[in-house]
Image 1 (cartoon, one colour):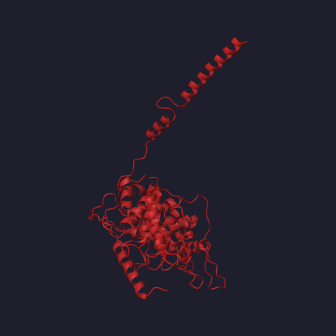
Image 2 (spheres, helix red, strand yellow):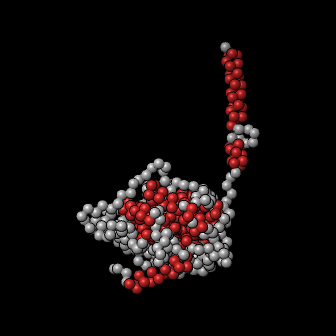
Image 3 (cartoon, rainbow, N blue to C red):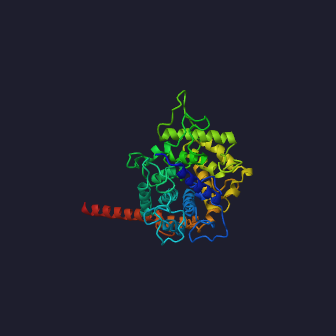
Length: 416
């Protein structure tokens, strides 16, 4: 049954209210775009000083994923903070100021927060129980159409379903096998939001309701989460637009075809705008840095390196203010780190900024990496200790072998 207008109105009002507070292009998928608020003290272990009411768990999850992508070992305190936000039933709220207080199972827990936290905890390792509980929460709140809504009981949407797909994939599970009682899986739900050949040409392949959903679904249809392997150098998979011919009822038949179609649609929009996607929330519809970064990450994840590069060049442009947009905001900084990493670039030197350093400075100090001297010392110990490497043992063994040889030779002579 289609959701009522009242349900749509409530969801739209909630999304707009969240977006207004966070200064984002949309919600809940963009929780990590919260504006910094220096007046609000950071909770111990939490990234950022902004009010975590709406985005605490999400921005923490993206920060940990970005550190993982950059080869940084997150502070134990920051991982503990995220794990400590988990509710007893495995779900996550946007933020829990009092973790000793029970969560509101009906309204206080969110799909996006839970799925992002699962991705992060799976990436950092050592939190298998928390990951398992998080996945259990997701599967127990899966809708009959195979997808997920913003919170339990709400209609499925492309953003939340895509984030949940990423969580399943990050935990080593095949999203296609996560079926609801109806037998439908997450891709069945996700593809229902994709525009087919009955729409305008520039809309075909996109996902309702906007570019934010299309960027999320471009990653979801690939069966991937926010942390993806860097794009291969010199390799490019050209985008392939949805073929309609004279069939207005034509739509992508499966997830791989859907991924191709949405990649082509996003690429075409980015090119038409001069390298960016426009904001769907502001009257002037100016550039939307966050959604542009999301699209670039998804395009790179799909192997469409040339299409991703168009957005990356815009993000890196001096006049476009990416560094200023992300300054002091752990969610935004993490988003850029993950995007540049996926595109095969260096997030430590992008748009004139070391985004990894800037991200690290918003949270607990990362675990110390081994210095070159320490690594040399460890190697010496592996080889047998200070000043005595493996060759010392080889020499001793050789001398001993020669001695045994002489001994055996003399014994044989005495026997003759």
